[in-house]
Amino acid sequence: MLYIACMNLKLILGNKNYSSWSMRPWLALAEHDIAFEEEVLNIYDPASKAKILKYSPAGKMPILIDGDNTIWDSLAILETFADKFPQFDLWPKDPAARALARSVSAEMHSGFVPLRKAMPMNLKRTPVLPKAGIAGDVQADIRRICDIFVDARTRFGARGDFLLGAFSAADCMFAPVASRLRTYGVRLDEPCEEYVEAIHNLDSFKRWKEAALKETWAHTHYDAL
Ligand SMILES: N[C@@H](CCC(=O)N[C@@H](CS)C(=O)NCC(=O)O)C(=O)O
Image 1: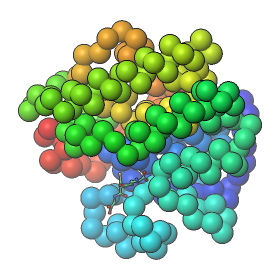
Image 2: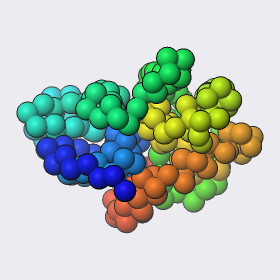
Image 3: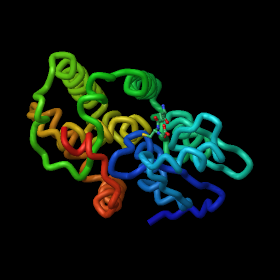
Image 4: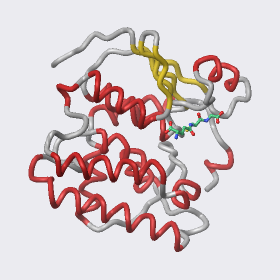
C-alpha cells in the first residue's frame, strides 16, 4: 500500500468519540496512508482551552500544523490537503462532480444546526432513537441529507461507493453525520443506508472509531440524549 511520509504534518484534534469536526481531516490523511502526528485534547476539560489557543487564535479544533503554517477549520484543512496531495483528487477532477462536492460540503459545513444539536456525534452510543424523539426540524435535516446522498450517488455513484464515486473530501465532510444517523437509530431508505454503510466500511473510519471507543472521557449530557 502507498505510504507517504510527511512528518511535517500534525493534527490537533478533539475527542475522537465526540468531535465530528476533527474526524473530517483525519479521515482524508488516514484513508490515503499519509503519515502525520496527532495530539488529541479533551474538549470538555477547561484546561484544554489554553493548549488549543497556543496552536490557533480561533481556539477550536481541528488544527493542522504544516511546517511553518497553521491552518484551522476542518474545511480549510481539507482544502490544504487537496492542494498538497493533488494525486488523491480530494476534489474530483470532473467539473460537475467537483461542483457538487464543493456545494454539498459547504452546505454541510454551514448548515444542519438542528441535527447537530439534537444528535451530537457519539460513537459509543447504543444505536437507539434519541429519548426525546426526532423533532420536525431534525427530520427535515435528515431528509435533506438523504436527498444529498441519493442525488450525488445516482449521478456519480457508478464510479464507486461514495458521494462522487471515489472517496473525496465530501465524504470526509459527511462521515460524521453518517455515524450519527446510525448511532441515533434513524431508519433510512435503502439507498441512503447504503452510503452510511460505505462510510462505516472505510478502513480509516474503522480506525478512528476503534480509537474513540478506547477513550475514557465522557460527556454526561450528550451520553444521556
Ligand atoms: N467550524 C469549525 C468548528 C470547530 C469546532 O467547533 N471545534 C470544537 C470541537 S468539535 C472545539 O474545538 N471546541 C473546543 C472549544 O470550543 O474550546 C471546523 O470545522 O473546524
